[in-house]
Image (cartoon, rainbow, N blue to C red):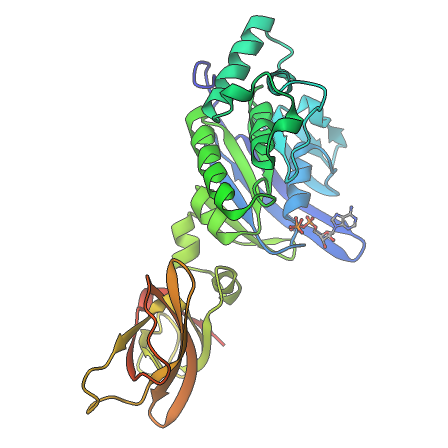
Length: 360
Ligand code: ATP
């Protein structure tokens, strides 16, 4: 399999200055994005922001109204010259949400389908090797209808990978699967893509999937990329409130910069480069709040629990936080099982790494 041959150097995919409209809707506004060899780039954004349109342009299923597309060193679309290479000549592997396999071909024949430039023996060898790596070896000679949805999705992945494409294009490939299965298949897919060193563009609306899978995340909104970077950058240094909220609901407050800081009911935050007196918006992730039971009530400020519920990996706590003479309702996530009773007095601490200050 991959790795036996030489992996080509140079950019695997480049979208350059892509603008595209459907009537009034701007699906892409001057988008420039590249994927390097062996890199997995995730396009992340809400429904309708233009992710699929970009992927379809890379695949050759949509012609950009403006801009250029390159796959490896081949120019495959150019609005200025009308240059155009059809999908089947682009050396891309494509997997969508719903795997569509050929029902009259066996699993092995499905996987070997795109391998028309190698000998029959080599086709079979590569097909079986890929199926083995995805835990599907025993199904090689079965027909697709006996496979579960998750297994069919793996076969679709193997089929797209078999011809060793310059780039894999994956559009929400895991979203049709139930949660438990999805985690396994994500893990297996990531392993296989990394092991084969295949450059990949993955489209998802699921922030956890992007954090888990990506070497680089491009966050999209309304046809634009609003932030691009390593998952840690995007998660820990979000460019604006939209990016923060996209990773989960937050406690949102207003404040003012005083002495380089912003007071919140849960604690003080540094205001960074914001000028004195600037009105700010503060977003505090539920994970940023530490909820501590108070044993001695003499110094307690009155903050208390309104409700607590188990989320699974964490506990959700709805709080009434006292600050001076004001009261704020906030929600916190605490790791593990931590379910304080209603009205229990608590102290609340703030982890500044999980709270963000933006100009209002
Ligand atoms: P989703 O996750 O829901 O697929 P997306 O981020 O992939 O969303 P796109 O499918 O790229 O978004 O669509 C971007 C915008 O362009 C949407 O408003 C969509 O309705 C519109 N759109 C996409 N394809 C067409 C089309 N063929 N004709 C008209 N409008 C379209």
